[in-house]
Length: 640
Image (tube, rainbow, N blue to C red; front, top):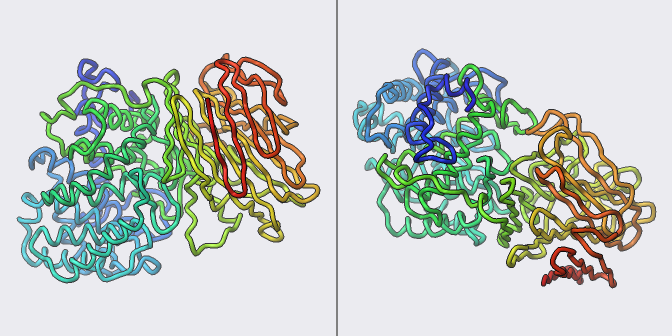
């Protein structure tokens, strides 16, 4: 345990009897919430309406950032007090009640206390995001805060919150913010046509965005990421749970249960969530869906496994510098890390991590806390799991607890958006992500990327078109194709496309690419995992067919996990159609080895056979054969 975080938050001694994996109990969660809140409240305005935390402002400005500080910490306070049955030893609710009254007295006024108005997302949208946390905090603490407010303060708060119902959200999970606001207003007897329509519209869109396998797209495109757990599942199921609505709880609970079948595997043996997608500075909010599943009973996990995942995630960040010496959550991953952030990230943004404290809604006698911790899904035997709806292939190895996500389906590109290399997002564009590595920055060589260089310009991967996925006993595959887009000159080359297949077995990743329509003079390059050359993780990449020129390239800006990194890279001249085969590995085993160049036999792969557009890989250890057949815009994979 990081001594500074333990001392700052006054965490109790570890309990290895009931929590053999993390040492954390419910008391640790309460202490962490109390410590986070106390540190943040030192930066409150005199009237308590804003928490103006130190740091560079977001693009929404300091007034919105101050509201964000109030709202997101209020969410943690709501879970903390509601989970304790109204006990509030630190007087949190009095502070939030005072801030509510002050912030809504003259909303929109340019002063130190007044909350900004909620407007359309493209005008002044961030307050709409925060309105959901305010509404949820009020709903969680209703008997001890809302019901004790003067009627004029209640009316002012309602008027400010209704701004979320009267303005246009962004076209994604934002529709759940007015949904949550309307749910609170209806719970306190303020239902009307406006609240009903806000909830109906969000429900319609939620059904439209549901893709199956427990996964939602975050909008009309193919953005599949942590917003599933900390937003798209959290808001509707928590709303139904608080309302006692059995029909809605059954609907959303079934979807969450299915989501957790795959998502619960995406936490490493060290507790880390996957470093993938946007808003990663929310850190342990990634465990919110696991905690909510345990609280509501809609989960495939045992209570002990659920606690191991949520406590493991909380501890992971607390012991790796996520909290500074001032007790505040920093903007970054472990500690501060600018490349992890988006322009909407402000000093209080990390406090969406408060959503993880939904686990505190389970009282002390609940099985989540009363049952002993059990192993997380990634701590058992090696597993490979495909998620067809999202285009994911999840690969975990029990020996080192590392989880890898092979991305053949999530791109965060809107349907109406053109593809531009200038908009490439390292948090979605790469072929693979893990719980122990992060993507390199946009200024450095891209890790886990297949690029084509034409006329001196190296291509980017933007829109990802899935070609299928599947898994069997101990193996799995996923495939996709993309149009290489270029930062200079014409954005695309006529006829040029790349088809990519990943086959996972144990710690090994067979990466097969077919480049189509490559012009004369084109060059393909494939990179592997970005790691610290002096660190515990070993990144290996070897060519099996078609590749040449292996080298290690430097990424001086590093990743969220290391200040400086190296990336293995292969290259090959390509013209017309070319099929390229490589084997990659990310492992903590210092004795790990991969095949030599161009199919030479060794202990992993015996040989590679190429017949037209069909690749057959013969595995040395057990004689299994993996056959990958490229068709006209299709891929089939057989293994046996």
